Image (cartoon, rainbow, N blue to C red; front, side):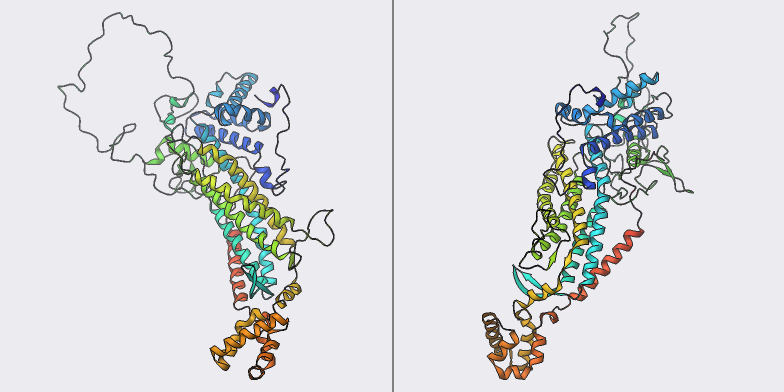
Length: 600
C-alpha cells in the first residue's frame, strides 16, 4: 500500500524524542528515523537490480524503471509497512509487495508491454535488504559523529594547551591526591576521544547479499538469456517458473518408448577426467570452489570506495587506466563467478564494503559497529563525568557556557550537556551487549538474534550521535577557573606536596626521622589548618632551620609538584596534530545524502 492508498488516519506514533533530549534534533536522529530506514531499504532494492543489470542478469531498462519508483520513498506508507511487517516478521516483505505493485502500475500508466516488476527483489532474501539498509543508515550517520568528534578533539586540544601548567588537585578514590594540571586532565580526555574516533572510523560497513542460504544459488548461470540483456543469466532467480508444470500429465504416446541405452555405453571406454573441471562442472570434493580467504577492500565508515579492480572486488581492472567494469571479467577464479561478480557490483553501487562472504549468521560487522559506538559513548562519558564533578558548587573549577533553562536560579549553572552525555554513556553498554549476544546465531540464517539487533543498533547510533553533538558544544564552551583550582589545592595546606618535602628531609636527617617528622607535621597542619611548612617548623625548629624557610615553602607548593604533566600534555598534543594531519589528507567518504552512483 502506498501513501495515496490510505483509508484511515493512524494515530501519531512517531517518536519525536520527547524522552530522548540527548539525541533530539541531532543529525544522527534525522539519519536513523523510520523514513531513513525505509529509504535505505529502497536504495538496496534499486542497487540489487542495477547490480544484476551490470552482470547481465536484468535489462538496464528494468533497473532504471525500478530505481525511479524506489527514489520516491515518500509514496510508501511507513506506518502501514510497519503494521504489515508483523505477518512476515520483517519490513521487507510488505515493502517489496508495495514496490512491485507500484512498478506494475507505472508500467501500465506508461503503456509499457514489459513485466518490469519481475526484477523487484529478484533472488534476494529479506535479510539481505535489512542488513544492507542497516549498513547504509550507519554509513550515512557515522560521518556526522566523526565530524563532532573532530570538533570535540580540537576543543580539548585547545584546553590542554592553554592549561598545560595550570595546577589542580589530583583526586583518587574521591580524595585529594598529588597535584596534576588541568591541561593533563584535558589531554586525557583528548586521548580517549581520539581513540574512539579511530575505532569508529575503522569499522567496515559491508553490503549483504547471500540469498536464501548464503550461497547466491539463485544466480547460478545457465544458457537462458533475458530479452534485451547480453550474456547468460539464471532463470532460477526469477519469480516466474521456467516451465508450466501445473497442467495435467499427458500419458498418451504415439509409439512405445525406446529402451534407454546403457550409460556410459559398455562398448566405449570410460573417459578420463579432465585435470581442470570445465564451466558448470563441480570440482573434486577436496578442492575449494573459490579461495575466499583473502581480505576484501577496507571500505570503512570513513574510507572512500577506491579499490575498484582490486583483488576480491569482482571487477576486471584496465591495466592502462586502472578503471574497472563490474560486468567484465578475465581469467579464472572467484571473480569469474556470477554470484561473486554480482556481490561486487551490488557493494559498488551502494558504496559499501564488499564482504568476503555473506554474513547472515556471521554478525561481526554489526558487533564491531556496536562496540565502536559504545566505546565512543564511553569516551565522551568520561569527559562528562569529570565535568559533572568539577562543576559542583563546592568545587567550581569548571562550568558549562550555558547551564539550565530560564527557570534555573542565577546562582546555579547546571551542567546539562554533561548530564545528557553521561546518560547516553550509561545506556550504550547494555545496547552493545545485545549486539554481541547476536554473534551466537544458528544455522545459515537465524531466527531471533538477527531481529534483536535492529532497535539496539539504531538506538546506539542515535545516542552516540547525540552525545558527540553535545560533547562538541560542551567542550567548545567550557569555562575553566584556575583561581578556584588553586583555592582547592590550598584546602590541604600543602600536604599534597609532602612527597617533595620528604625527599629533602630524608637527605637531611635520614629516612626514619624524616618519616616521623613529616607525619607529625601533616597531622598538625590538618588539625590546626596551618601550612605544612609552618607545621614542620613548629614540630622541629632545628630541622626546619636546616632546610630553610623559603625552601620549605617552595617544596610544599603544589604548583611545583606536577612532575611530568606538562611533558605528557605535549605528547598528547603532538599525537593529535599528527592524527589531524592524517585526517585532513585522507580521502573522505562521499556525502551521506548522495544517491548511490551507477556502477562504473
